[in-house]
Image (cartoon, rainbow over all chains, first blue to last red; front, side, top):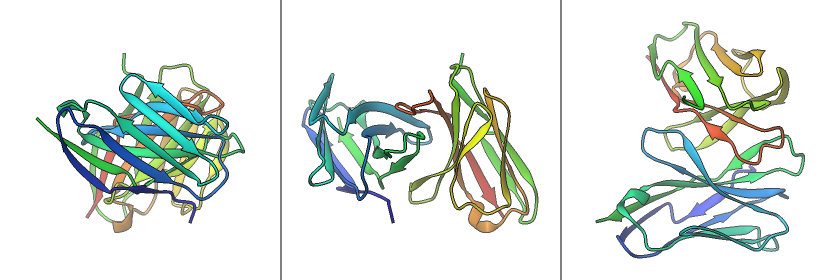
Length: 112
Length: 112
């Protein structure tokens, strides 16, 4: 299966703490993206990192990519209750058709 | 001014029926997608169209037929619905390179 894996599957932290989620994948990629899904909603794009990049920042988000280990991590700093959601990594294939392969997701709960 | 909209939001139907889900995007994107998210939140691509042309067709039963009347619309028709079709179906759109996909709110299909 091409499906990636994320860990942990669930994460519960206190407001203000940092949250780290990891993603592993199996095939060659063009890019890796992270999406957030609030309960009962569609997915929202957070950040994209290209296969030739190692780290990227966007506000309180920091993403790393290690193509030799086929893994990525998403760090959310100074978490807020509003960050409570499911987070998915998705890999873009080299064919550049727009096809994304999603990981299983990490459910993050941030307690106020 | 919703970017990607889907109708209906909920769909409850009996086994064997035929149903359609409509999707529209007003972002001017060339590419549209259908995804299926199961009860474990596993998200898998089904189809993608680029400017009304089928680009991605994953191993989806023939009972599922996408139709793109123009590049702003991608509808999903499902024949002879089965219990296993119960899921949340998401429409998404992106520019041709698919770097960032914009998702609709989802349609929760329940087959009884």
